[in-house]
Length: 262
Image 1 (cartoon, rainbow, N blue to C red):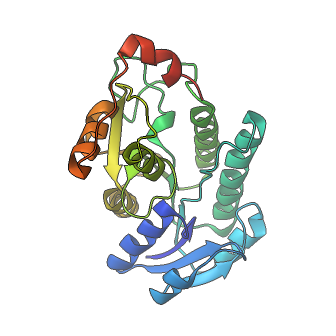
Image 2: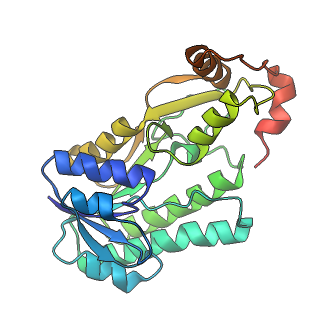
C-alpha cells in the first residue's frame, strides 16, 4: 500500500503515519507550507506541500498513491461561529473526496468521530444507529455534516471507508484531553460532571485506521472505541495517581444544562 495522509502533522494523523510505517506502508503526507515536518521526515515520510482547501494540491499529492487517509480535522473550534465551522469542516472533506474521485484511488479511509453518531439518551451507539434528529453541540453538527458529504461522494463512486473514533487520549495531545488533565491537576476544575464517555487510546485509534484500510468493507462505518466510563471516574483516577485532591461531583440533574452547552 502507498498512502497519502492529510492531517499527518496533527495528533491523530501523526500516530496514523507511525502505524502505517510499522505496517510496511509507503507514506506521503500533505502538509501546509508553514507546517513543521522535521519529525515526519526523520521517519522517512515523503512530504508534499499543499492545502486541503485547494483541491488540485490534493490531486497532485495523490499521484502514485492507492489509498487516501483523510485525517485532517479542525480542533480550534472556539474562534469560529457555527456557519464558519460548518463551512470549514465540509469544504476540506469535499475537496478530499473530489480529489480521490478524480485520481481514482482504490480506498479512502475517512476519519469522522463517534461524537456525530447521535444516539438517543440511554442508547448504546453502533455503526447503524439512526441519528436522534437534533444536535447537542455545534461540533457534532459540523462533523455530522462533513461525514454526510463524504458519504454523498461514496454514492458517486468514491471507495469510502469511514472510521468513527471515540474521544481520543494519549501522549502528544495538545487540545481537549491535555487541557482537561492540566486544569484538573492545577485545581482549576471546580467540579466533575457524571457524563458517560467512550474513550480510545491514540495508538489503538491509529491501528484501527490501518485495519480499516486492510480489512474494512467499502461503504461501511467502523467505531473505534475502548473504555467506557464516567468523567467523574476518570477525574478521580487522574487525581489519585497524581496524589491530588479530586473535585466534587455535580449530580446529573444539575449537570445536564452544562453538558448540553457548546
